[in-house]
Image 1 (cartoon, one colour):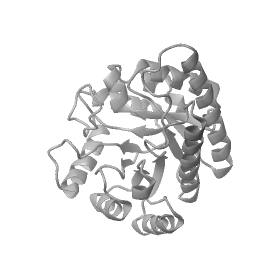
Image 2 (tube, helix red, strand yellow):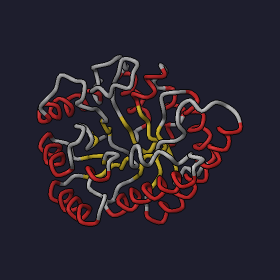
Image 3 (cartoon, helix red, strand yellow):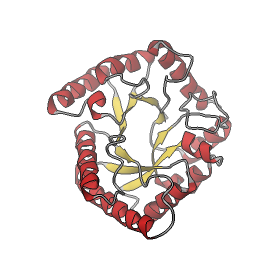
Image 4 (tube, one colour):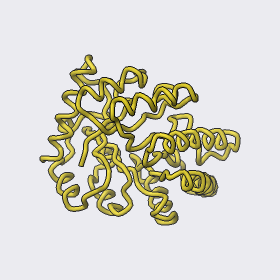
Length: 267
């Protein structure tokens, strides 16, 4: 299994700066972050430049994160907002197709929507959104990876959609930090191992801190045992952030990050 890192590891850093640093650290797999302007596919000119850089640096895209937070209205009852999110997610799908990305990662229903009619209507809208995006992505050779969340009410919807949609086109983006917030690593990963498309790997102490592995309380030896058993066909994709850490130098951060990723594979 190869190791990779999200291009959004340093808030505000664009692809022109991030990609050479990622390459120099030794990574060869990446996931594009949720800001199209920083990730390099907001317009045709940037996308062409991004494509050339990826080829030059021999970097492979494992996945793209759908625009965040602008693309997070797929379950909205405000139709204009939902359609705007659909347009942005289609932009990500188009970029993934052109760049040979395997999948686009989607967020689902907002946290804290109480049971009742409103929640059911939102789920219906979200189901329609995922269906539309699946139909758009399939002929372009792109899968949809639905990301697990930090609360039971969110993951209930995730489970429902994974059970409803075909595994050939829709699967799981497993976020280790999110499940650790819920205090139940790695139940979700084991339950839906056959549906895994990609990883978001980071550590924490019970809040969504996006720490490097071995800086929180996740049991990485247990995680590694699952990796060995399941033999997943994707990269071990780190999703850490420099913000709130002791690191100020991205070169140092990436050097530590790749060593931590490799340590996970040996845990």
